[in-house]
Length: 102
Image 1 (tube, one colour):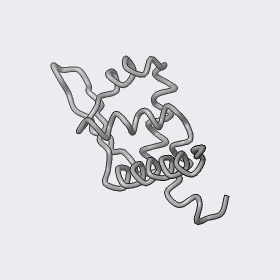
Image 2 (spheres, one colour):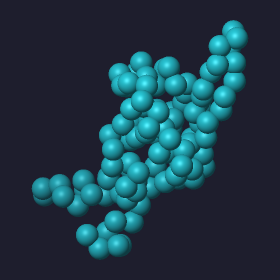
Image 3 (cartoon, rainbow, N blue to C red):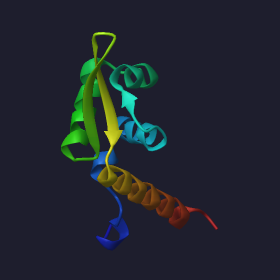
Image 4 (spheres, rainbow, N blue to C red):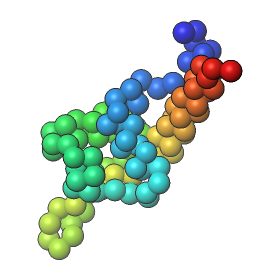
């Protein structure tokens, strides 16, 4: 694929778990670690690894607080994350249209 044909493609979203995390954050203002874990049915370590990857790419922001004296880790998508994810979705939609049999 040429650079132009890959416009909008982001390797960060190659992994289906990161794709699902960003999908959740696109329709929810914030989401907590335990809710992600339950919905995605993944281990703590696997989830933490993918959340860290998205955080390092500056696609999500971590917020730590307490709820009923228990630590609560919440994730929020950043403007950069929302724009990159939308561009990636647009790329995928274009790819589908280009490869659809006439």
